[in-house]
Length: 249
Image (cartoon, rainbow, N blue to C red; front, side, top):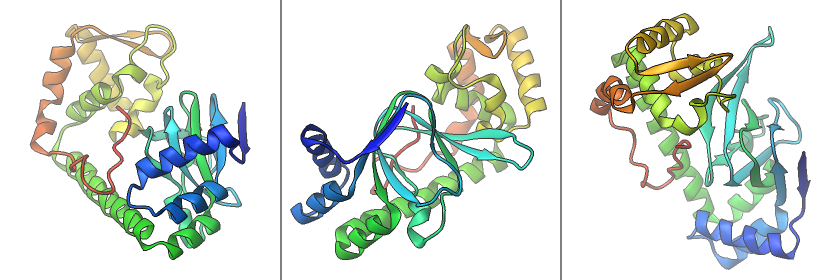
């Protein structure tokens, strides 16, 4: 179940602390405004934000892991990224548009959410907050450039291995993993057919084992890391730089 409501006294204190941690440059007035305008969203599973939803919202993840999704007209839904605490969602809605990807709870999630128009008005009044949004946009551009480099210069097997290691706790399970095998192709930028071929090869080599219906069991982590080693030639953007909020690990 999900809920969205103004923060009570305890939640207001938590919201205030989270806002100060996320935006340490914010003035006391900025923090007060952000706490006043936010609502608390809690979701155990399923959809949090739908593509095209109105009114648009901006949200800050406090705890848990969300998955960003794309959907096709024929009903297909693919995972395009996993994100955790500190990630700011819905930034593209600040120019008046609707959110461009779906947001689902992969684990139990708690977020602070603001109506996009109200959040923009607060940002307009406080330049330090606007600078943070600029930093986040710059980091996002750097991250997209990095992903394009990986998909241009590295093999499908290396990218898939890197993905499995990055999301190890979500993809390896002998029961029902939070990220099923069928979602790996979009996350790694590899066709579903290629994913199947690579997994069969790794299974024959004793690196992992496919478990019906959608699970994977990791047998040799060192061997999988060796498959991902070529990715090291293309370092990711500095995760400690201003604006960084790395994908969930």
